[in-house]
Structure formats: C-alpha cells, structure tokens
Length: 349
Image: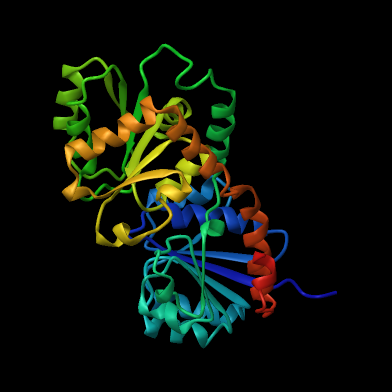
C-alpha cells in the first residue's frame, strides 16, 4: 500500500491580496485531509486569518519567522509545499527546497515563484507572452467557500430578478480587504448623482481601514443607502443584489461564482493588468479607480440595469466559466505533484 504523502500549506498575509489565500488553503486542506497528511502553517496570524481555517475545522500552526519554521519542515520530510499569500523571494524558495523537492505557488508575483517547478495563477494577466514556463493560468484556481455556495443557492431560489420586479434595483458596493484607496467612498459619491430609483448597499468587511463618517453622512441623508458589516449581513445583501461593484482582485471570481452582474474597478496598477474581470467573462471593467469618471461608472450601471440583453449575456458568460469542477481538479493536481508526477497537462484538458 502506497504511503500517504505529506503536504504543507504555508500562508502569509499580503495587503495586496487580502484574505482569500487563507480561504483557498483552508478549503484545499480540508478536501485533501483524507488523501494525504496535511499540515497548515500561518505566518504572523491574526483573528481574521485563523477564522478562515476554523470554518473548516482546521487548526493551523502559527509561526513568526521562517527561521523558526525551518526545523519543523526538516523533521516532517515533506513531499509538497504549497505557498500562498505573500509574494516569495528566491532566498525563501532555496531554503524550502532544502527540505522539500516540490514547491507549488499560488498567485505569486515575487521573483521566487520563477525558480519553482509550478505556479498556479488565478490572478493572471492578458499578456500571453509574459507567461513563464512553470505557470498554469486560468479560473481553475478559484474555489468557492461554503458561504458562497449558500449565496449561490439562495440566488437561484430568489424572487425573479430584474426586470420582472417592480422594486428599485439593488446595487452593492464591495471593495474587500481594506480598500486601501477608499474606492468605496468614491463609488458611492458617484452613484448618488445618478437620478434613477435604486437601493445602494455598502458592504464593509473587518479590514476596512477608513473612517465611516462620510459614508454614514451620505447614508443618513438618503433613505435608499445602507451600510452593512459582518458575514451574515453581507450574505443577505449579495443574495438580493442586482449589480455588484468591486475591485479587480478575487471579488470578481466571487461575483461570477454566485452569478451577479458585476462592474470591476482596479484598486491599483497591478489589478489593472489582471484579465479575469473583463467583458469576455461577464463583467464591465472601467479601469483604474483613482481615474474613475462619474459618467463611466454611471453608464456601466445603467447598462446592466436597463439593458436586458447586456445583462443576460454577462450572466451567461459567467456561467460558462464552470467553477463546479475546480475542487476536484485542484485536489487531483496537488496529489499528482505530491507524488512527483509532473505531467499535469492531461488533467487540464
């Protein structure tokens, strides 16, 4: 009988990527638990990162520095290390390779990823010439959480969406993971100048780092604006949203997963280059947030709300992505790599 392979997930928070890497690692570790010996290490953990694992009944091992972690990795005699979150350095990859033959990177913009055997990228650019030999790119590398699965099912059961209802359209604004450039406020300010009946919900996660005073003032001045915080509140809003406005990182994947018309706004230059949240996948992309013009945002909203063929085509393009196979595909890929079977192209056909 072939032995269980040993796989370690090492996750470190990156302000540029937020907390989805922890969520992805949690889901994968839970799925792989019966197929391999799984270890999860989280660098400089906080409550939000640990919570992602508790959801799947996992207890990660916290560490402060790689100097502290390396002796543990050496003793485990690992078959595969999965790195996610912070961008890696060449020095780190060399250190890890001393104790493990195979390293897999997820969405790593660091130089270290170029020196490893495999790099799986959901956050891919549209420049095909820039793809490295060790990279596999595509939407395969996004997995929906239990929360997203619940929202998706509830959306399928909801009362008929636009244009069948007579209620004002419901627009959700959701810039996750800190919203460093405060596009939440900029987006709301532009929307308040749009003279059509609508409901606006501002979704704030625990990482939102700005004062909410200006948002609260606008919400108090108009009955159709509300601010919501907390997972349950966000879930309720996303179930009933007719349009979502978000950044261009991982949130577009969540929008496509639950099948909601979505407008993407890049928070920074890196997000501007990312190719998923574009028209071919069912989005309206309006470029860099700090250069966002009021008229561009308003026109994008009006396209989704008033033009049924555009909205229908967007939702159909999202549905074609086919997220349902990703769980099995990714676990199969990881097991193959842990067995040092590196011919993975057949699994992606």
